[in-house]
Image (cartoon, rainbow, N blue to C red; front, side, top):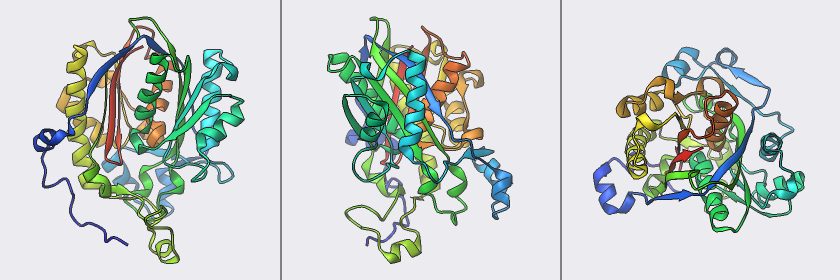
Length: 353
């Protein structure tokens, strides 16, 4: 097995030099489509910081370092496809659309039910959809990757409607003995239904990007074709997620500021033109640092991290659905969405809702 790196691959390469080497992601515009409806699902089992304190965790550290008060845990009899199904059902009901009208299913997840078949195929069968179905793994940036991928199918006429789901059962891949990672994550799913829209609707700006040199900062070392799980791996916890939190934090704060500025510039807008900002809910300190750097007012910033923790691919669509249902996003509003995570990967968009 490869030894664990003790230094960040990104520490020797600053933001500007990486941009010069081609890491600046491509920006584009994609109009003429809309989000027809949203949906989400969070498991009923709430795990509070007080619950974790009974297991030896420090609630004060959790709040100070992350802002998380509670997270949700999926019942052991259920899996990612179940959460995806519940979120998708809520979404289709909100759109008043039947499964026969769905022409593409894309599921963003890093915690599939099985290595194969795809979770999207399991979801497709359970919903009764008869359409192409595929998974996409970009970790916490997964929903943005899936949303922008599906949007291109709708825009080009390859699909009139596309069901996009972000879902992760993170509690199955986090080491219970890791005090710096275990309290951060929860389970959830969110969904949107994309369809054709007016020429004023769609993505005023969008971008996807990746910095693969930071792959070792956030990964599960064992369980793939490079390192099938062995008894030694299980004993040492290499089948669980491992994260260089300090390096990921620094990267995320810088990345958010850079990519949001670039995306806004491409859209021709400023933050004053944005009604709501929904960032991946990874850590309240990341969100607050980026907001301070960019000058995002608190009332324009959506935060539910305190209630759910980091839900990976479920994070952005869960936030969007909650915002829509609370009346914080209405037709005609401009919403900035941004996801970022392992890969290292990110996606950002300004959506004319």
